Image (cartoon, rainbow, N blue to C red; front, top):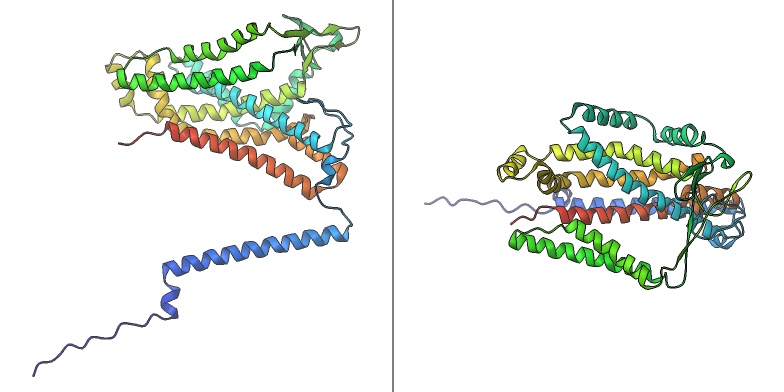
Length: 397
């Protein structure tokens, strides 16, 4: 008689097994998270609505069409106290963008120079760059802003005793006054020509890169691109009859009249944020270059490349892959730090938004507007830098 093996029946899939199922648990916690967020948002909305009703505070964005009643010190577009609150916010946003763009460009250039200088074999240059980095990196940015505004620009002479600079330019504690350009008929085509020149220069750079990869021959791409970007607009400017004149500043007994003026608040904020952020960018540049293996430099030297060409063609392109991600954070920090301009009266977004909030009492609406604008600027900056980072990434075979 043969014994038959008895096989146990498979266990039933009950509640206990479902709890330990990774897929079920994942779905459950995701649904729970969404429910908690929805409930929290509904509670906040109900609380805000109740508080507004209790204080008889009107809600909505209709106040943006009301008369602002306040002036701003600097505006890239036409603005007066009779303009609307909405236009005042646009003025602040444009001033924030102006600080961000000019500051990022300057901070990148200065940071790159200081970062390279820290790696110099010259003892004096390396130590001076180290002092620069350690000084600015350990000082609050607001203190740097006050240093430039109160310690440097405020001690300049009065407008009647302004410092005479070349090209009918004057420097005083009211800012830098210069001949203001006035464009005539036909000048509207020049921005279009400039954009076309930039597109042509980019196309030439892409073509030159493919040509170099195929033949190994290299053209002076930078010089040719610069000639295209500068030359085409200049030729167009001449072709339309040079429609440009200047409003020159005139010295009065007590003040300067005419011309354009760069306000000291802008100069102080621009210099402070640029030089402050450059110290952090310099360390990023240094770390990126140090992250490139020594073998790359030795291989370039073995091929007969000069040190300058080795840095330009071998070290820097590889260092960019290390530099770009943290560099994005510094660009975002500079843009957000522009809100510190409110401390010296520069009319950036936070300053004009705060004045509007105080006059209208529309706190929720104004905060939502400022949050949306700052968030949009930061996201667009991140998207561009992520795209650039992807272009610089190594292509794996």
